[in-house]
Image 1 (spheres, one colour):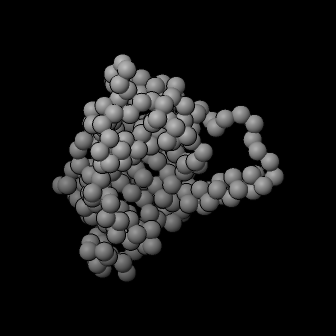
Image 2 (image 1 turned 135 degrees about the horizontal axis):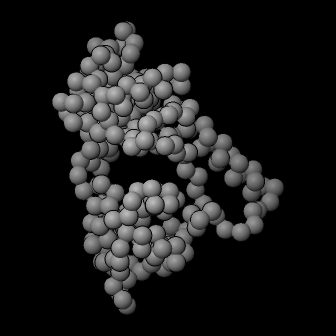
Length: 232
């Protein structure tokens, strides 16, 4: 297995696209798929598909392409999707409540076990079936439940402090919904989701399409989608 830092970030992001598409094909009863067909469905070249998957090993069968069930199993293992992940949410506002109500997390192996909020007026309330806990209980819950993921759903001014508390409590990865960059020490993974930036990029694509088209292909063979920025 290659070291994480040696894997190009666009290639790592595309693994999720491959897994999603392959899982859909498997559910439809398909057994094999070629790199050309897989790439075409995602707006990629077959060479890009082979290059991305080749980082992690040889999965295809000459003359037959990829066995979908085998490749799904391998991608799930590579991405850590072959196990359940426990997470905590910090912030019981609009975004936090929406995340707690999103049932697909559990179906996909991500289980939110607790929600926290620094506001004394919020702690103790019930939100989406969870009792909102005070931040003073964060470290104990993370240790007891063996939580590895933390979700930051607080205003930008509080985001760094919350991230620091999550890292100190022992989480290894942070999903940040606050509209600001947060700093974490080496060894902690972080992905940031900024809805405003995503909408700005979507507006740019539409406006740019009205005024002209770009020369060349999408960066690094990526499909014509704008993903939220990542930090860390």
